[in-house]
Amino acid sequence: MIENTLQQLFQQYLSAFRVYDLAGVTDCYHIPCTLNTPDNLVLIDSEEKCQQEFLAIFEQLKQANTQKIVAQKVSYQAMTPSVSLVCIDWVFFDNNEQIFADFSAVYHVESVGSSHKIINVASHDLTHSLNLAHSFTLS
Image (cartoon, rainbow, N blue to C red):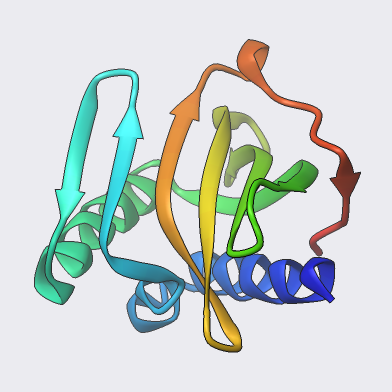
């Protein structure tokens, strides 16, 4: 059950990212939540702030002529009955099929009723990728 729900959440996330669907991406996040990169920590405490952050990310992807986004490895592990950890290794390709960005992202996902929402994401170099207890695929 948890695997199917997580797979649905991240398939929605990936599908929305591929077409720059702001509502589709932001719907995957719980408000408030946090976004962490090696250089930055952002507290998202409103729908508007969430939209601003993802509009900026979409702009970077568009400027890099991103044509393909691939989830190379996806694994998860339940931490508590309501919180799961998901690790995804992402690769972003430009229109020349060159890698624009690759990184590992670790998501904390909370069960909220019958749905799941991302409450925290921390992006790292691929060398810090985690192999969690279970895996699934995204297409």
